[in-house]
Image 1: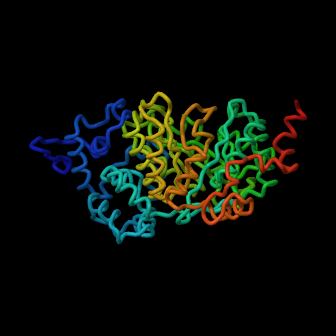
Image 2 (image 1 turned 90 degrees about the vertical axis):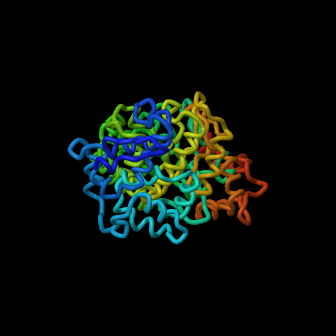
Image 3 (image 1 turned 120 degrees about the horizontal axis):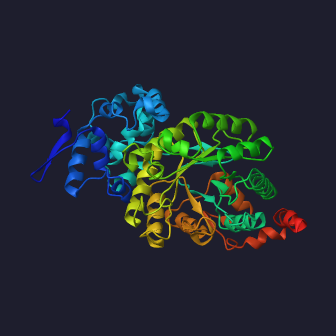
Length: 472
């Protein structure tokens, strides 16, 4: 293997000690890998690592998991569930040849999804490291992952959004007001998903109940979700709360998931409970969020680069056939993705790796206010993701989350992306928008953006204001 892990670039010879070192150093530059001491020491060494990586085969990567089999339940899941027959057409090919096959115009999304069950996360991460940003857009655009909960996501020519009506005090009246605002702009067909500030069982039950009441009164064909810890949501379901999607943040190693308070057994139990007690039609009823740097921040990355650890998170997600997965790409901070360039690259990598893993992939195209990034950077990423066929993005008033204190996609941005790319909402949601007079002939009408139209209905006013006014 020694000579196989060596390359000469512009007269300088580089030799790598292992396939893991090749993978680490073939990564595009990002601050998290620098912090962990895993990155290439120069652009020349990075090119040498990519050259070596391009000559490796899928079998080489299968035999070199990032985390040892005996030490990690995720590695055991990936190795044991991998289907060699699915990747038979790629046997003996180098990663460089596979990259060429992926971007070839004759290769379809169906071709890529057919080999997906035979790819471990390390294989998916490896080929991703050989691709340019445009390669990642071209390849991801081919892949359509169609899922169904209360409506349908992932169809060609459509883009959806998660309406994120967070409130710093969990005021349900404030949450519902933001929901009406977002709906008036055509947002919310992926999910109405609230990040709670308190995360109690009681607040989770209350938010789920009131959002479901509003959805029912208006007849909105979408899903509700409260992003409490998965055990809190399970208790809420046991108390009879109307929960459509069950949420959890996940990561790419057993140790990082333990930091979240989860295991495979717990995720299995929650999935079964959601199918039994949840209120969605299904069959896809789970929602996962990820982000490059998660495992490193938990010191559970096993000396593995961020891209590979992120790919492993998607390998875990696909076990549950989720309705939604998204990378909260810039949220963890500049310690892991320093600036707009790194955030953009990571967003495109994550989207492609999720799609190639067979996932309904979205993205929270976002940044924290101490990153070297601004709204123009994020709007660039949003446009690239829309071109790449992303299933959904976030939708927040003015793109500014007043509870989580970060910047992301606004209601207006999502409307603009549909205009730019001639995209439409989920079909059931589009029909509802037309019935409400908010959408006609493939675009928003003059009524869009006016949330007061919903409040002209007494039944809606009673949901939004009734209980909190009585309690006051």
